[in-house]
Length: 87
Length: 292
Image 1: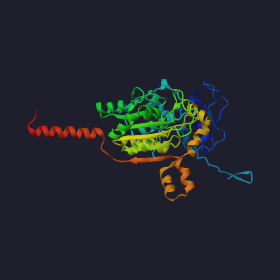
Image 2: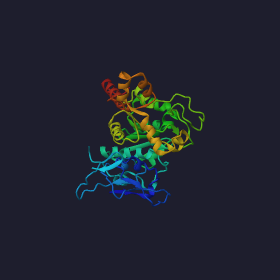
Image 3: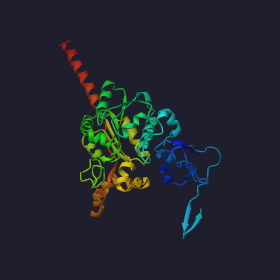
Image 4: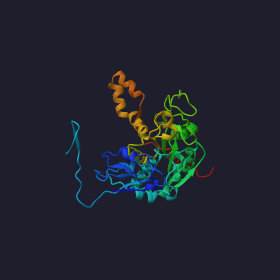
């Protein structure tokens, strides 16, 4: 789970660009500053590496690892000849 | 690796809530440096009441305002002199100086040289963004050749200061340089610097999209952050290429910024030597039978 203080976000999008598993996207909701803060994608492969938390210049992101439940299987996307194969 | 503290725990423990969000521009790396410093303090379990922060003038010098520790804000370039005074008055304190490239090496260049030479026990976190950001983008002494600034509209023709190599040559106990976007190396360097009983300089290369990037065709935050990735090289890699590489490769890496730990030595600091001297003189006077 990712907790975001939406009103502290300045919209630099560093978290979205630097996420190694591409789990974040820009939300459609404006905050007080008039920028679109990030949010987790509906379907994501977030493995709680905390890079977004470490790189956020505004202390707006906290990554809370999900402890309960089975660990999620991480999928890798192989692209062969333009066809995306989920492995 | 040890378990890291959550950002919201750090926020409650160390930051002044009313001051946030920070005044830093969108895409500035200074906030990240605060985060790394707090993580280093948390991992070393240093009591925040034993920390004194000092800063001069500039974007980076706003940082002590956000951290819930004692802090002193002084005139332009004099942060290191002030920190020397703090350490002399109370050697028990952990003195951390937040300073920028213009503040530390431009205006306060001489103070920096002598603080490093005397090896005074303090941790200097120098945020290098190649420009005087707060005052409107004047050319800083660290700007690479050809950079555009308000005082260099046709490109910089001056040789840039290499801060880390200068501090290494002056015999500072700990010197490291890292770009802001590798999280673990700077945190480890700040930890090492805080534990070192001498002058520790951690130069963090922090992107400035507003004052530097916008004038140098790197206005997009992503483009600027990628520029740092393309123009930095690990010291070990650099030495390997300088020893065994081809001429083309050598020419290419000469333009790059070396990153890594430049120096890590255990040396007696200024105040340690001073205390020894005081003890020696007291002993001498006692042997003489006291008095004059």
